[in-house]
Length: 611
Image (cartoon, rainbow, N blue to C red):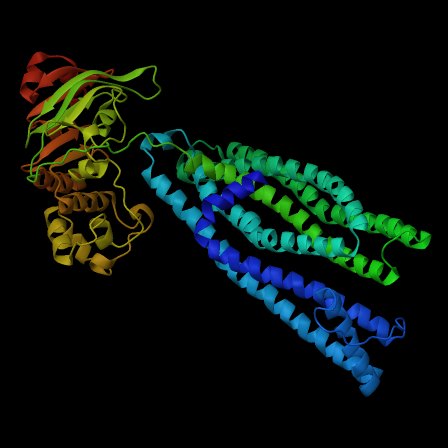
């Protein structure tokens, strides 16, 4: 439960007034419950002739206040019985009991009415916090995590917290108040009997706690397995073409069935333990009632008790009223244990550290951002801290210059350009933009200088307009159209069903590869970056699409500092400088003609593509 209260302090603080109001109405509910029992039982004793004492009106101050109130209540009831008769008195009592019950249920409803916005609000806040954290974390975090597992934490684990933890908040507010109130009532009747109850309750709580702790462990395993299943589904759908091409359906089905079988057994174990909560608490509660009946009855029969039979009955009524909240509270503790297991997985995201941080005293970029310079000074980089992917990189890209990065797969081309916008941070050396270390700039300012066009056009399931205007909430239709014209995209856009308001589907699936790429280029054009990064932007296109995209790229590259990762070397023959990467090092630098004459790695790459 310690974890639960830490959770409440973290997420429920903005809803403290909801908690305070709910506590107030729960206290009122407890008072009305106790008062209704205290009010009705002694009067029924009088009504049915069990209490033959004659009552007289007492002045306030003549005795203790509670004693005066009790005496005067019985006095007025006896007067009504004398004047109106027992039948009408019983009707009045039934009406009073009905009114008190109405007030009690209204008070209980009001307390829950204020709790519901907190339940749903905390769930919303957790989802928002997770999403903010996910979009703020560096790309490196996601290379070590399965996408399906992250999706499971965003969906399944948050839903589990909502169902298990947040739905239990009302119980955690209501039932302890009722239990404490009933205990005070029991103490007022007989502290000896209540002390006996206090001795029994920790034993019952310890027995229930063993089941709860085991349930948390099982639920954590279940959530982890569910994340693995989602990852399996995501990989299967993404690689379905390969699965079918290699006749691997059976293998994939066996793998998936093994994981679902494991989850099946985990859920069986969890369900059986959770189902055990109710009968176990009911049995222990009944056993407690039986023991107290024996203990209290023995005291009364022996004449050693300070209470009479009617007070003992009232004590038992209160205690039996306490059993249901205690039983529900025990079920709530099981439910919370399940939710806290899910919260542990959520905290692995919320607690993840982001090494890409703004400096304490950031430098300001110059106002003229049309062209920027990029420099690498003795840069070394490693993903795992052991093997360098890049070693001793020294490179200067002057303002307005186009520099191409070429090399075999795995030579470090994409890693090199990812260091410029600080998708990763260098371990040794410096990456400079306009003569300033990128670590000395605000991340947002640094990335505002850059436009990216990747090999795979990354688009969203939204309209064409919103995809081009992505990141620019003030973009107008005229500006978007102008960018689309430069990107050779306007013509096909106006021929779609709804023009710029056409939905393009998941990842732009309703568009061809060339159309998606031109939308991506239009997005970069609208941003008007001073540094342009092209990562094999035409390598996956057919000849006709490549021609249109290449033409759009040339318009985009004009008068901009451009770094091009090239797969098709024919697209970079006019680059101002070509750098050849081999095993993480720049081994050749020069123009296309110079490198051909050198007859080295670049020349071999060109010859291979001409074969």
